[in-house]
Length: 294
Image (cartoon, rainbow, N blue to C red; front, side, top):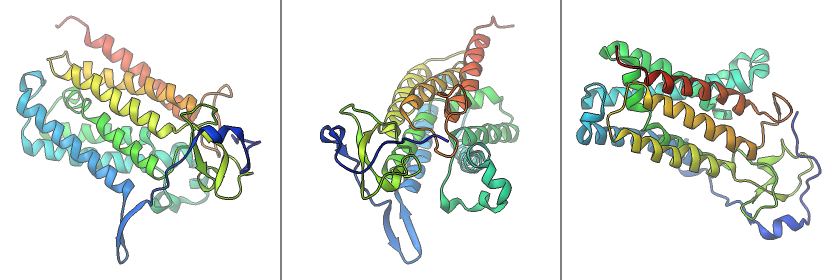
């Protein structure tokens, strides 16, 4: 089990150069029993951004697409993708990060209000959704994923901003001026010696790093690639490779889940382990896409 021992909520020279983590109420507004949360809003903004950018590609860069698209198909694509991301994200989290708890309490899978979503599970869910979508509209699988690939990073970026607002995904302890001081309630699993309000050390804001890399940076690269016609599989392969590398590198600054810790060689996290197949698959797909046309 991974824990940041030796940290406590007291005087520490590290925090003198670091800002406190901004405390944002996760609930935007409440109307009786119904609450609008920032995290849910980030998901909605992400799906909306995918739709708007997809519409732009259809209207302004039809020559860059490997198959014909119309607005009704785009709406269904976003719906299929959203269902795959949400359902797969929950199932993936339970299987990858909470399987032991699930075996003792199967209903844990359905208690979504307790939190827990996994990108890699959501990614697998989206792949299944794209297979079903392709069958319905008789579209080639890679043609569908090539269309979707440049749109996904902006949604991932919104999701990471939701993590930041919720004070989730605390990073590893740092003396860098980039570090932020987390509240004890956000890091108690990592540092059980943290008492009071604020932890006595700064941590990397890893959710912001991942929003900047797998969100903004990956979006810029893939969007630029998508502006011109590409061989089938190039955009899908670039997404797999790019996301896998971004996630693998930023995980070195993110604390592994306390109840799992490092899963390989005492320094590889579950997120890194799950990202390695994406890197391999992305590289293989890019190599395959360079083959001479038959």
